[in-house]
Amino acid sequence: MNTNARPSPDDFARGLAGIVAGRTAICSLEGDLRYRGYAIEPLARAGDFEEVAYLLIHGELPTHAEREAFAARVHAAARTLDPAVIDALARLAVACPSASPMDALRTAVSMLGQIERDVLPGSREALLAQAERLLGQVPAVLATWCDLAAGRAVGPWPDGPIASALLQRLTGRTPPVDHVAIFGTTLVLYAEHEFNASTFTARTIVSTGSDMHSGITGAIGALKGPLHGGANEQVLEVLAAIGSADRAEAWLEEQFAAKRVVMGFGHRVYKDGDVRAKLLGAMCRAMNSGKPAAEAIEQLADRVEALMLDRKKLKPNLDWPAARVYHALGLPVSVFTPIFVVARMSGWTAHIIEQIGDNRLIRPLSLYSGPAPRDYVPLELR
Image (cartoon, rainbow, N blue to C red; front, side, top):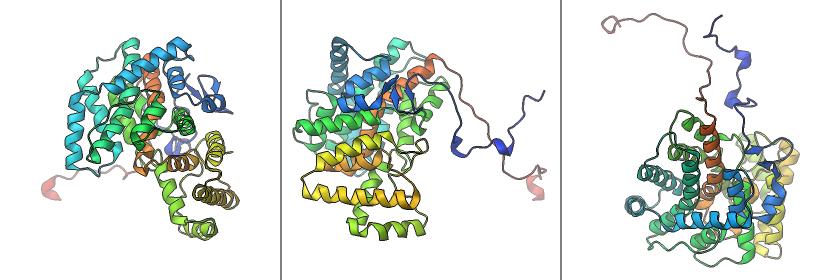
């Protein structure tokens, strides 16, 4: 038996499309999006990010007491960023204030890993504690970087849940209740999504025996790409480029002719539409009702959706309404993908804990497509 046998060309799947690469008890996309068995719709409508983060990381919905204790630990982590990290970010902000906040998050998480000096492989209790700290530290890092890059003194982390505190830090004002509610819903919807590119990156890294902070650092790098997390930033660019509903058809036809991808549409897994986009899209329209400028954007979005379905049979993914929600909340485009990081920290850490708990090195095969075998010629004869 040849143990080195390679797959045939017929077995090749570009981008691992349709390939089952492992098991997970965290998230299911079969028929409906579920977190730990719970349908996404009631979780999203409740909009309680701490509750969902607890569910993903610990495996069960929390009791009232468990949720309060969990939220207190996360809040404490947000308020106590290590001064060494803040000092390093301050120096980086002076050197390159226009750097992407994603780069700041990636760098800060790496520094936090060095400060914590991860013990490999780490007990489950230690991993849970690390996950909870990161859940608070990452949004605080994002707010810290935004202050430093703008030349402001770093503000304190506000009281309240992550959705309220982060929205206040990023906008500089106390957000109304309805803004906190829909922002919390976006965090819940972005929290977890099975073996996507960034999650698979994190699992691959820790499958080598590496630490949680290394896995998260790699995941942030994967999420930065425009075909993954960065798509939500490009959605607003699409809407701005079109300008108004009456220009949508001509603009889209130009993109189709040039074979360009229209960001915010289609999904590798969802073929009949992204359930998250349906939920958030309805909330976004309700939020913007009665506001002329916002309603104009919604009319444009509706027109683009209709044309994409008619011309390409593509439906919106979560990034399409999320970008409009963040714009309506007064958030700068530069923080759209970092907010994704804040939310997905719950899913990433849950997957890292799961991978470490039942680990096998992730090492796929490849199909060689280079030159046929050839003989080496010494340098002096070439």
